[in-house]
Length: 109
Length: 111
Image (cartoon, rainbow over all chains, first blue to last red; front, side, top):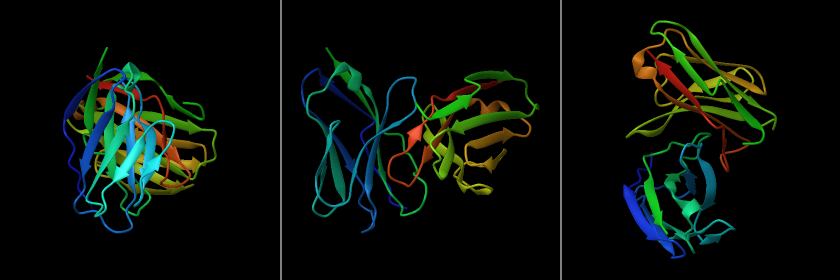
């Protein structure tokens, strides 16, 4: 199973870009990298996923290192609503996702 | 979230009593999951199902059982609740591993 390392917490100011790092040095070649976030008092929600190339959607961008041992979730302009716990999850090529403890992002006005 | 409902939303029960939590979906997704969330532990997978009557254990399955007799319902049962099972329980559904949808959670307190 691929192990992940994420900072426990990060801070940002509103309207600034945020780069959330994740190390997954033991990832296998066929594992996708998934990102979820959990807003206060809610269940997690899907953010983005990717395999090798950088990915963009309406919520965020995902930058994946060339060696795939790390990735970065990019929020281009943080809002107060982006304050949440962000989870980086390498897929284990099975039918379930295992969550870690994630990074708690605080956004200040 | 639309398409997935957990019940009850809150429950207080006594140690030693049986408790059943229900997850109901209207999306006809194949996969359903039960997670628990505790401070300092993030989300931990309890059990999951990959079809009617097809279930498997997760990371923390001891003390829990599940059943799925219909595609839309996934039940989590604590046969004899203990204080260590006080937690917030989340159900999730997916059609594949890409893109889980989570319910709003059930806060269970065992006194």
